[in-house]
Amino acid sequence: MNQPRRYANVTVVDHPLVQHKLTLMRDKERSTKSFRQLLNEIGMLLCYEVTRDLEMTTCEIETPICPMQAPILAGKKLTFAPILRAGVGFLDGMLELVPSARVAHIGLYRDPGTLQAVEYYFKAPSDVAERQIIVMDPMLATANSAVAAIDLLKQRGARDLRFVCLLAAPEGVAHFTASHPDVPIWTAAIDEKLNEHGYIVPGLGDAGDRMFGTR
Image 1: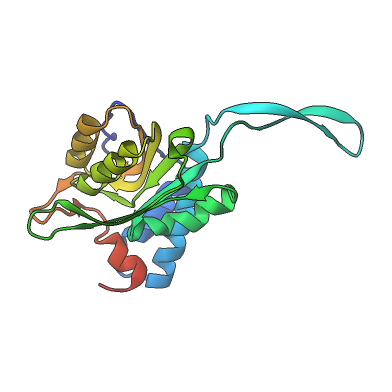
Image 2: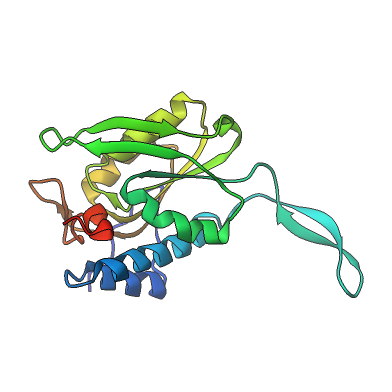
């Protein structure tokens, strides 16, 4: 088996459970229900990885045995920012781990002719400049939508940003890192290439269509 390519500022999460679930999702015979559930589960596992270095502090508590100084998350709570519509497939799994997180919604669609991202909705907490924001979309293909989403957040003052996806194409990684070199990427795999229609190869098809049963 070929070794995955290495990219600066990109973490490929090669945990066996992530890779197993990704293989199940690639299968074209996977049902909508199963695909949606697997995306939720992988979202939780990716969230565990992307939050590995969150800032910590301590607080004083009392256990049933004695008082102690115990570790606790420091600062403002996270904000999860799914790119609509497919990005919401990650959201429930991530909120299971961080139920107090705020949620921003970024509505973008890909123009089928130009493959450029078109904004149709944006709603985020007013204090995004003070929060760590995890932007998510299952596919980093051309990266036009991901770049546009980061642009919108930065325009509103966001500074601490991370991007999580299920699959990436080399072309998408190159475009994203050239546009936002300060934003690290977490993904389960970097596939071979994009085809002439802007889909990842071998990929898993259109994640939104497969998740919502609109294929």
